[in-house]
Length: 389
Ligand SMILES: Cc1cc2nc3c(=O)[nH]c(=O)nc-3n(C[C@H](O)[C@H](O)[C@H](O)COP(=O)(O)OP(=O)(O)OC[C@H]3O[C@@H](n4cnc5c(N)ncnc54)[C@H](O)[C@@H]3O)c2cc1C
Image 1 (spheres, rainbow, N blue to C red):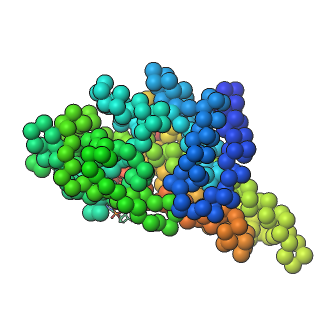
Image 2 (cartoon, helix red, strand yellow):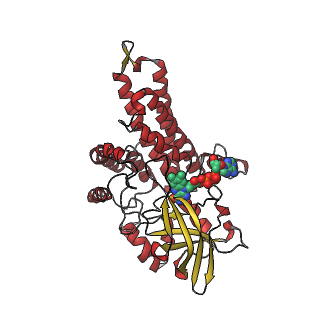
Image 3 (cartoon, protein in one colour):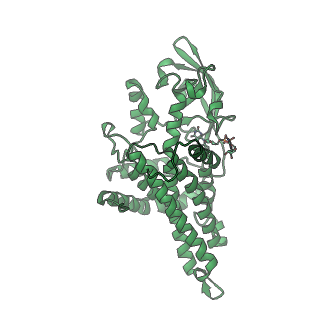
Protein backbone atom coordinates (compact mmCIF):
# COMPACT_ATOMS: atom_id res chain seq x y z
CA UNK A 1 0.00 0.00 0.00
CA UNK A 2 1.34 3.41 -0.93
CA UNK A 3 -0.15 6.53 0.63
CA UNK A 4 2.38 8.89 -0.90
CA UNK A 5 1.49 11.28 -3.69
CA UNK A 6 3.19 11.13 -7.07
CA UNK A 7 5.50 14.00 -8.05
CA UNK A 8 2.82 15.29 -10.41
CA UNK A 9 0.14 15.22 -7.68
CA UNK A 10 2.48 17.00 -5.26
CA UNK A 11 3.30 19.64 -7.83
CA UNK A 12 -0.36 20.32 -8.65
CA UNK A 13 -1.30 20.34 -4.97
CA UNK A 14 1.49 22.79 -4.17
CA UNK A 15 0.56 25.10 -7.05
CA UNK A 16 -3.09 25.23 -5.96
CA UNK A 17 -1.98 25.74 -2.35
CA UNK A 18 0.11 28.77 -3.35
CA UNK A 19 -2.71 30.13 -5.53
CA UNK A 20 -5.11 29.95 -2.58
CA UNK A 21 -2.59 31.62 -0.24
CA UNK A 22 -1.61 34.34 -2.67
CA UNK A 23 -4.82 35.12 -4.55
CA UNK A 24 -7.83 34.01 -2.52
CA UNK A 25 -7.17 34.21 1.22
CA UNK A 26 -6.33 37.96 0.96
CA UNK A 27 -9.84 38.54 -0.45
CA UNK A 28 -11.64 37.04 2.52
CA UNK A 29 -11.97 40.23 4.55
CA UNK A 30 -13.61 42.04 1.66
CA UNK A 31 -15.81 39.03 1.03
CA UNK A 32 -17.00 39.00 4.63
CA UNK A 33 -17.81 42.69 4.40
CA UNK A 34 -19.84 42.29 1.22
CA UNK A 35 -21.77 39.25 2.42
CA UNK A 36 -24.78 38.36 0.31
CA UNK A 37 -23.87 40.76 -2.48
CA UNK A 38 -22.32 38.40 -5.02
CA UNK A 39 -23.14 34.76 -5.71
CA UNK A 40 -19.44 34.26 -6.42
CA UNK A 41 -18.58 35.69 -2.98
CA UNK A 42 -16.41 38.36 -4.58
CA UNK A 43 -17.05 40.70 -7.50
CA UNK A 44 -17.81 38.59 -10.58
CA UNK A 45 -15.23 40.46 -12.72
CA UNK A 46 -12.52 39.72 -10.17
CA UNK A 47 -13.68 36.11 -9.99
CA UNK A 48 -13.33 35.74 -13.76
CA UNK A 49 -9.93 37.45 -13.72
CA UNK A 50 -8.79 34.90 -11.15
CA UNK A 51 -10.14 32.07 -13.27
CA UNK A 52 -8.16 33.47 -16.21
CA UNK A 53 -5.03 33.68 -14.04
CA UNK A 54 -5.54 30.07 -12.97
CA UNK A 55 -6.06 29.05 -16.57
CA UNK A 56 -2.68 30.55 -17.44
CA UNK A 57 -1.20 28.25 -14.77
CA UNK A 58 -2.92 25.29 -16.44
CA UNK A 59 -5.88 25.05 -14.07
CA UNK A 60 -8.86 24.83 -16.35
CA UNK A 61 -11.22 21.98 -17.07
CA UNK A 62 -10.05 19.87 -14.13
CA UNK A 63 -12.73 17.24 -14.84
CA UNK A 64 -13.30 18.02 -18.49
CA UNK A 65 -12.27 15.47 -21.12
CA UNK A 66 -9.30 16.36 -23.32
CA UNK A 67 -11.62 16.24 -26.34
CA UNK A 68 -13.23 19.42 -24.94
CA UNK A 69 -9.90 21.05 -24.13
CA UNK A 70 -9.90 20.02 -20.48
CA UNK A 71 -7.16 18.62 -18.28
CA UNK A 72 -9.22 15.60 -17.20
CA UNK A 73 -7.14 15.13 -14.06
CA UNK A 74 -9.32 12.42 -12.58
CA UNK A 75 -11.17 11.98 -9.32
CA UNK A 76 -8.25 11.68 -6.87
CA UNK A 77 -6.62 14.81 -8.24
CA UNK A 78 -9.98 16.61 -8.13
CA UNK A 79 -10.34 15.63 -4.48
CA UNK A 80 -6.83 16.90 -3.69
CA UNK A 81 -7.61 20.17 -5.47
CA UNK A 82 -10.95 20.52 -3.64
CA UNK A 83 -9.07 20.08 -0.34
CA UNK A 84 -6.80 22.99 -1.23
CA UNK A 85 -9.65 25.21 -2.46
CA UNK A 86 -11.60 24.41 0.71
CA UNK A 87 -8.92 26.24 2.70
CA UNK A 88 -10.44 29.59 1.78
CA UNK A 89 -13.86 31.09 2.43
CA UNK A 90 -13.92 32.36 -1.15
CA UNK A 91 -16.13 29.85 -3.00
CA UNK A 92 -13.73 29.61 -5.91
CA UNK A 93 -13.61 26.89 -8.53
CA UNK A 94 -11.44 26.70 -11.61
CA UNK A 95 -13.14 27.41 -14.92
CA UNK A 96 -13.67 25.06 -17.82
CA UNK A 97 -16.13 22.65 -16.24
CA UNK A 98 -19.71 21.71 -16.99
CA UNK A 99 -22.29 19.59 -15.20
CA UNK A 100 -21.57 15.90 -15.80
CA UNK A 101 -25.04 15.24 -17.25
CA UNK A 102 -24.63 17.81 -20.04
CA UNK A 103 -22.39 15.25 -21.74
CA UNK A 104 -25.57 13.26 -22.41
CA UNK A 105 -26.70 15.96 -24.82
CA UNK A 106 -26.86 15.32 -28.56
CA UNK A 107 -24.46 17.12 -30.89
CA UNK A 108 -26.63 20.22 -31.18
CA UNK A 109 -27.17 20.41 -27.41
CA UNK A 110 -23.45 20.04 -26.84
CA UNK A 111 -22.82 23.04 -29.11
CA UNK A 112 -25.60 25.08 -27.53
CA UNK A 113 -25.17 24.18 -23.84
CA UNK A 114 -22.19 21.98 -22.97
CA UNK A 115 -19.42 23.80 -24.81
CA UNK A 116 -20.52 27.37 -23.90
CA UNK A 117 -20.80 26.23 -20.25
CA UNK A 118 -17.28 24.79 -20.34
CA UNK A 119 -16.08 28.05 -21.91
CA UNK A 120 -17.77 30.08 -19.17
CA UNK A 121 -20.10 31.82 -21.63
CA UNK A 122 -23.26 30.24 -20.23
CA UNK A 123 -24.35 29.38 -16.70
CA UNK A 124 -26.43 26.36 -15.80
CA UNK A 125 -28.40 25.37 -12.74
CA UNK A 126 -29.69 22.00 -11.63
CA UNK A 127 -33.37 22.15 -10.75
CA UNK A 128 -34.72 19.03 -9.07
CA UNK A 129 -35.88 20.04 -5.57
CA UNK A 130 -39.40 21.41 -5.09
CA UNK A 131 -41.27 22.83 -2.11
CA UNK A 132 -42.86 19.39 -1.63
CA UNK A 133 -39.96 17.17 -2.75
CA UNK A 134 -36.38 17.32 -1.49
CA UNK A 135 -35.03 14.11 0.03
CA UNK A 136 -37.66 12.23 -1.93
CA UNK A 137 -37.29 13.49 -5.51
CA UNK A 138 -39.68 10.78 -6.70
CA UNK A 139 -42.51 12.99 -5.45
CA UNK A 140 -41.79 15.96 -7.72
CA UNK A 141 -44.93 17.59 -9.12
CA UNK A 142 -43.53 19.85 -11.85
CA UNK A 143 -45.03 18.44 -15.01
CA UNK A 144 -44.34 18.62 -18.72
CA UNK A 145 -47.16 17.91 -21.17
CA UNK A 146 -46.62 17.31 -24.87
CA UNK A 147 -48.21 19.84 -27.22
CA UNK A 148 -47.29 19.22 -30.86
CA UNK A 149 -43.53 19.47 -31.12
CA UNK A 150 -43.22 21.30 -27.80
CA UNK A 151 -43.47 20.41 -24.12
CA UNK A 152 -45.32 22.74 -21.78
CA UNK A 153 -43.82 22.89 -18.30
CA UNK A 154 -45.65 23.99 -15.17
CA UNK A 155 -44.34 23.87 -11.64
CA UNK A 156 -42.01 25.32 -9.05
CA UNK A 157 -38.48 24.49 -7.92
CA UNK A 158 -36.71 25.65 -4.79
CA UNK A 159 -33.19 25.97 -3.30
CA UNK A 160 -31.59 25.97 -6.73
CA UNK A 161 -27.91 26.89 -6.50
CA UNK A 162 -26.99 29.46 -9.13
CA UNK A 163 -30.64 29.76 -10.15
CA UNK A 164 -30.62 33.55 -9.86
CA UNK A 165 -27.71 33.90 -12.26
CA UNK A 166 -28.20 30.95 -14.64
CA UNK A 167 -29.26 31.60 -18.20
CA UNK A 168 -30.48 28.02 -18.59
CA UNK A 169 -31.62 25.27 -16.29
CA UNK A 170 -31.60 21.49 -16.33
CA UNK A 171 -35.10 21.03 -14.98
CA UNK A 172 -36.73 17.74 -14.00
CA UNK A 173 -40.43 17.22 -14.70
CA UNK A 174 -42.93 14.40 -14.67
CA UNK A 175 -43.72 13.38 -18.24
CA UNK A 176 -45.59 10.13 -17.61
CA UNK A 177 -47.77 9.78 -14.52
CA UNK A 178 -48.37 6.09 -15.24
CA UNK A 179 -44.72 5.25 -14.77
CA UNK A 180 -42.72 5.43 -11.55
CA UNK A 181 -40.28 8.37 -11.59
CA UNK A 182 -37.37 5.92 -11.25
CA UNK A 183 -38.80 3.92 -14.09
CA UNK A 184 -39.29 6.31 -16.95
CA UNK A 185 -41.75 8.82 -15.46
CA UNK A 186 -39.42 11.82 -15.25
CA UNK A 187 -37.56 13.72 -17.98
CA UNK A 188 -34.81 16.34 -17.85
CA UNK A 189 -35.17 19.44 -20.05
CA UNK A 190 -32.70 22.11 -21.06
CA UNK A 191 -34.64 25.33 -20.69
CA UNK A 192 -33.34 28.82 -21.47
CA UNK A 193 -34.44 31.63 -19.21
CA UNK A 194 -35.84 33.39 -22.30
CA UNK A 195 -38.31 30.54 -22.70
CA UNK A 196 -40.13 32.02 -19.74
CA UNK A 197 -39.07 30.70 -16.35
CA UNK A 198 -38.42 33.22 -13.61
CA UNK A 199 -36.44 33.15 -10.39
CA UNK A 200 -36.36 34.73 -6.95
CA UNK A 201 -33.60 34.54 -4.31
CA UNK A 202 -34.20 32.51 -1.15
CA UNK A 203 -32.40 34.19 1.78
CA UNK A 204 -30.46 31.72 3.94
CA UNK A 205 -28.20 31.72 7.02
CA UNK A 206 -25.20 31.33 4.69
CA UNK A 207 -23.43 33.97 2.67
CA UNK A 208 -25.54 33.85 -0.49
CA UNK A 209 -28.87 32.64 -1.72
CA UNK A 210 -30.12 29.79 -3.84
CA UNK A 211 -33.22 30.47 -5.98
CA UNK A 212 -36.82 29.59 -6.33
CA UNK A 213 -37.74 28.89 -9.96
CA UNK A 214 -41.22 29.34 -11.43
CA UNK A 215 -42.52 27.63 -14.58
CA UNK A 216 -45.86 28.82 -15.85
CA UNK A 217 -46.80 27.35 -19.22
CA UNK A 218 -43.17 27.45 -20.34
CA UNK A 219 -43.04 26.13 -23.91
CA UNK A 220 -39.94 24.06 -24.60
CA UNK A 221 -39.12 22.65 -28.06
CA UNK A 222 -39.05 18.85 -28.01
CA UNK A 223 -35.39 18.74 -29.05
CA UNK A 224 -34.54 20.25 -25.64
CA UNK A 225 -34.99 16.95 -23.83
CA UNK A 226 -31.63 15.99 -22.28
CA UNK A 227 -30.89 12.33 -22.96
CA UNK A 228 -34.07 10.37 -23.54
CA UNK A 229 -37.65 11.05 -22.49
CA UNK A 230 -38.02 9.17 -19.18
CA UNK A 231 -34.28 9.16 -18.37
CA UNK A 232 -34.54 12.14 -16.02
CA UNK A 233 -34.38 10.35 -12.69
CA UNK A 234 -31.19 8.50 -13.49
CA UNK A 235 -29.57 11.71 -14.81
CA UNK A 236 -30.57 13.52 -11.63
CA UNK A 237 -29.01 10.82 -9.45
CA UNK A 238 -25.80 10.92 -11.48
CA UNK A 239 -25.52 14.68 -10.99
CA UNK A 240 -26.06 14.42 -7.24
CA UNK A 241 -23.77 11.42 -6.73
CA UNK A 242 -20.60 12.98 -8.03
CA UNK A 243 -20.69 15.91 -5.61
CA UNK A 244 -20.67 13.89 -2.43
CA UNK A 245 -17.01 13.01 -2.07
CA UNK A 246 -16.05 16.47 -3.33
CA UNK A 247 -18.07 18.05 -0.51
CA UNK A 248 -16.13 15.87 1.94
CA UNK A 249 -12.85 16.89 0.28
CA UNK A 250 -13.66 20.57 0.57
CA UNK A 251 -14.57 20.02 4.23
CA UNK A 252 -11.07 18.60 4.79
CA UNK A 253 -9.40 21.76 3.51
CA UNK A 254 -11.67 24.07 5.48
CA UNK A 255 -11.17 22.09 8.67
CA UNK A 256 -7.39 21.98 8.26
CA UNK A 257 -7.27 25.74 7.89
CA UNK A 258 -9.55 26.17 10.94
CA UNK A 259 -7.48 23.74 12.99
CA UNK A 260 -4.30 25.64 12.13
CA UNK A 261 -5.97 28.85 13.32
CA UNK A 262 -6.87 27.15 16.60
CA UNK A 263 -3.33 25.80 17.07
CA UNK A 264 -1.81 29.24 16.43
CA UNK A 265 -4.28 31.05 18.66
CA UNK A 266 -4.03 28.61 21.53
CA UNK A 267 -0.24 29.00 21.58
CA UNK A 268 -0.39 32.77 21.92
CA UNK A 269 -3.51 33.34 24.02
CA UNK A 270 -2.52 33.52 27.68
CA UNK A 271 -4.94 33.06 30.58
CA UNK A 272 -4.07 32.63 34.24
CA UNK A 273 -0.39 33.06 33.33
CA UNK A 274 -0.22 30.30 30.71
CA UNK A 275 -1.02 29.80 27.03
CA UNK A 276 -4.37 28.07 26.70
CA UNK A 277 -2.53 25.45 24.59
CA UNK A 278 -1.18 24.08 27.88
CA UNK A 279 -4.69 23.13 29.00
CA UNK A 280 -5.94 19.64 28.40
CA UNK A 281 -9.45 20.94 27.63
CA UNK A 282 -8.02 22.82 24.65
CA UNK A 283 -5.62 20.06 23.60
CA UNK A 284 -8.43 17.54 23.34
CA UNK A 285 -10.36 19.78 21.00
CA UNK A 286 -7.29 20.08 18.78
CA UNK A 287 -6.55 16.35 18.92
CA UNK A 288 -10.13 15.25 18.21
CA UNK A 289 -10.25 17.62 15.25
CA UNK A 290 -6.97 16.33 13.82
CA UNK A 291 -8.15 12.70 14.06
CA UNK A 292 -11.48 13.39 12.40
CA UNK A 293 -9.95 15.47 9.60
CA UNK A 294 -7.52 12.65 8.83
CA UNK A 295 -10.34 10.11 8.79
CA UNK A 296 -12.33 12.24 6.35
CA UNK A 297 -9.30 12.65 4.13
CA UNK A 298 -8.97 8.91 3.65
CA UNK A 299 -12.71 8.39 3.24
CA UNK A 300 -12.86 11.04 0.51
CA UNK A 301 -9.71 9.85 -1.25
CA UNK A 302 -10.90 6.25 -1.18
CA UNK A 303 -14.24 7.24 -2.77
CA UNK A 304 -12.32 9.22 -5.39
CA UNK A 305 -9.89 6.38 -6.00
CA UNK A 306 -12.81 4.03 -6.65
CA UNK A 307 -14.22 6.50 -9.19
CA UNK A 308 -10.85 6.57 -10.96
CA UNK A 309 -10.84 2.75 -11.08
CA UNK A 310 -14.29 2.78 -12.68
CA UNK A 311 -15.74 1.09 -9.58
CA UNK A 312 -19.12 1.89 -8.03
CA UNK A 313 -18.28 4.37 -5.26
CA UNK A 314 -21.77 5.39 -4.12
CA UNK A 315 -21.45 3.74 -0.71
CA UNK A 316 -18.04 5.30 -0.07
CA UNK A 317 -19.21 8.69 -1.36
CA UNK A 318 -22.13 8.63 1.10
CA UNK A 319 -19.85 7.65 3.98
CA UNK A 320 -17.37 10.41 3.09
CA UNK A 321 -20.12 13.04 2.84
CA UNK A 322 -21.84 11.99 6.04
CA UNK A 323 -18.69 11.85 8.12
CA UNK A 324 -16.96 14.81 6.44
CA UNK A 325 -19.80 17.30 6.70
CA UNK A 326 -20.44 16.45 10.36
CA UNK A 327 -16.73 16.53 11.07
CA UNK A 328 -16.41 20.05 9.61
CA UNK A 329 -19.35 21.27 11.69
CA UNK A 330 -17.77 19.84 14.85
CA UNK A 331 -14.36 21.29 14.00
CA UNK A 332 -15.66 24.81 13.33
CA UNK A 333 -17.58 24.70 16.59
CA UNK A 334 -14.47 23.67 18.55
CA UNK A 335 -12.30 26.24 16.77
CA UNK A 336 -14.80 28.96 17.66
CA UNK A 337 -14.67 27.76 21.27
CA UNK A 338 -10.87 27.88 21.32
CA UNK A 339 -11.01 31.50 20.09
CA UNK A 340 -13.51 32.55 22.76
CA UNK A 341 -15.28 35.83 22.02
CA UNK A 342 -12.98 36.56 19.07
CA UNK A 343 -14.28 33.47 17.30
CA UNK A 344 -17.81 34.81 17.47
CA UNK A 345 -16.95 38.15 15.87
CA UNK A 346 -16.92 39.08 12.19
CA UNK A 347 -13.23 39.95 12.49
CA UNK A 348 -12.37 36.36 11.63
CA UNK A 349 -13.78 33.91 9.06
CA UNK A 350 -14.78 31.43 11.78
CA UNK A 351 -18.35 32.65 12.36
CA UNK A 352 -18.99 32.78 8.61
CA UNK A 353 -17.74 29.23 8.19
CA UNK A 354 -19.84 28.23 11.19
CA UNK A 355 -22.90 29.37 9.24
CA UNK A 356 -21.80 28.28 5.76
CA UNK A 357 -20.74 24.77 6.75
CA UNK A 358 -24.13 23.93 8.20
CA UNK A 359 -25.61 23.38 4.77
CA UNK A 360 -23.15 20.57 3.98
CA UNK A 361 -25.28 18.37 6.27
CA UNK A 362 -28.38 19.24 4.23
CA UNK A 363 -27.71 19.56 0.51
CA UNK A 364 -26.84 16.76 -1.91
CA UNK A 365 -28.49 14.31 0.47
CA UNK A 366 -29.09 15.11 4.14
CA UNK A 367 -27.37 13.27 7.00
CA UNK A 368 -30.46 11.14 7.39
CA UNK A 369 -30.50 10.18 3.71
CA UNK A 370 -26.80 9.23 3.82
CA UNK A 371 -27.50 7.07 6.89
CA UNK A 372 -30.38 5.51 5.03
CA UNK A 373 -28.27 4.74 1.94
CA UNK A 374 -25.40 3.28 3.96
CA UNK A 375 -27.70 1.13 6.12
CA UNK A 376 -29.70 -0.05 3.08
CA UNK A 377 -26.49 -1.11 1.34
CA UNK A 378 -25.54 -3.17 4.40
CA UNK A 379 -28.96 -4.66 5.06
CA UNK A 380 -29.62 -5.59 1.45
CA UNK A 381 -26.12 -6.95 1.02
CA UNK A 382 -25.22 -4.47 -1.74
CA UNK A 383 -21.88 -4.04 0.01
CA UNK A 384 -19.99 -6.59 2.04
CA UNK A 385 -18.82 -5.64 5.50
CA UNK A 386 -15.04 -5.70 5.52
CA UNK A 387 -14.74 -5.97 1.74
CA UNK A 388 -11.49 -4.39 0.65
CA UNK A 389 -12.68 -2.43 -2.32
C1 LIG B 1 -28.16 26.12 0.00
C2 LIG B 1 -28.86 24.99 -0.71
C3 LIG B 1 -28.55 24.71 -2.03
C4 LIG B 1 -29.23 23.71 -2.72
N1 LIG B 1 -28.97 23.51 -4.06
C5 LIG B 1 -29.79 22.69 -4.77
C6 LIG B 1 -29.69 22.63 -6.21
O1 LIG B 1 -28.83 23.27 -6.84
N2 LIG B 1 -30.57 21.86 -6.89
C7 LIG B 1 -31.54 21.12 -6.26
O2 LIG B 1 -32.31 20.45 -6.95
N3 LIG B 1 -31.64 21.14 -4.90
C8 LIG B 1 -30.81 21.92 -4.15
N4 LIG B 1 -30.94 21.97 -2.78
C9 LIG B 1 -31.97 21.19 -2.13
C10 LIG B 1 -31.44 20.10 -1.23
O3 LIG B 1 -30.92 19.04 -1.98
C11 LIG B 1 -32.60 19.68 -0.31
O4 LIG B 1 -32.83 20.77 0.58
C12 LIG B 1 -32.30 18.43 0.45
O5 LIG B 1 -32.26 17.32 -0.40
C13 LIG B 1 -33.32 18.17 1.55
O6 LIG B 1 -34.62 18.27 1.06
P1 LIG B 1 -35.71 19.16 1.86
O7 LIG B 1 -35.10 20.46 2.15
O8 LIG B 1 -36.96 19.13 1.10
O9 LIG B 1 -35.92 18.42 3.23
P2 LIG B 1 -36.93 17.17 3.48
O10 LIG B 1 -36.73 16.14 2.44
O11 LIG B 1 -38.29 17.70 3.66
O12 LIG B 1 -36.40 16.64 4.86
C14 LIG B 1 -36.69 17.26 6.12
C15 LIG B 1 -36.00 16.47 7.20
O13 LIG B 1 -36.52 15.13 7.23
C16 LIG B 1 -35.45 14.21 7.05
N5 LIG B 1 -35.93 13.07 6.28
C17 LIG B 1 -36.51 13.09 5.05
N6 LIG B 1 -36.81 11.85 4.66
C18 LIG B 1 -36.42 11.02 5.68
C19 LIG B 1 -36.45 9.62 5.87
N7 LIG B 1 -36.94 8.80 4.93
N8 LIG B 1 -35.97 9.13 7.03
C20 LIG B 1 -35.47 9.95 7.96
N9 LIG B 1 -35.40 11.28 7.84
C21 LIG B 1 -35.88 11.81 6.71
C22 LIG B 1 -34.38 14.98 6.32
O14 LIG B 1 -33.11 14.39 6.47
C23 LIG B 1 -34.49 16.33 6.98
O15 LIG B 1 -33.84 16.28 8.21
C24 LIG B 1 -30.21 22.93 -2.05
C25 LIG B 1 -30.49 23.17 -0.71
C26 LIG B 1 -29.84 24.19 -0.03
C27 LIG B 1 -30.21 24.45 1.39
